[in-house]
Image 1 (cartoon, rainbow, N blue to C red):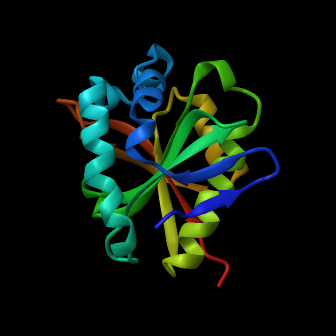
Image 2 (image 1 turned 120 degrees about the vertical axis):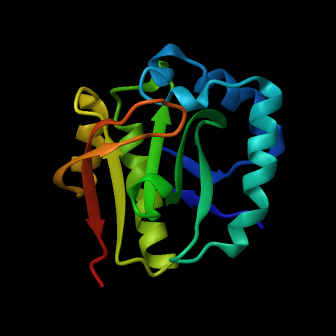
Length: 177
């Protein structure tokens, strides 16, 4: 199944095996690994990730979701927006996102996160989505806030790929239904 979301400037679609090389290049940028070190991977690891996640899209529900949309500008993969259960935060459904440094600061991430968040809330009939953002990651905080996420406090979280708990701002975006 190929789900495509269109925004004024972007195409968002579920990742495919053919996206692995481009995703691997973007995911391994220092700009992204600074905040999401668990994305450091080989091209083969990235392909396996896509192959492991892609079949689960049809099974996505409000209790269990694992979906990653590639963010494409003029046919070029420039980032991702994903939703999935975050074990470290009571298994709530989180939205996570990154964009290549080349395209940062142009509103693309906000545009993509808005579209995927709306899709997730409506399609999966979620009451809310969460986002967790490190206190020093000001660009990601701005994206969450521009998309309507409300900061509800700080939580100590042992995040994927890390060895010690650290503080994260905890945001929620509530469904308007």
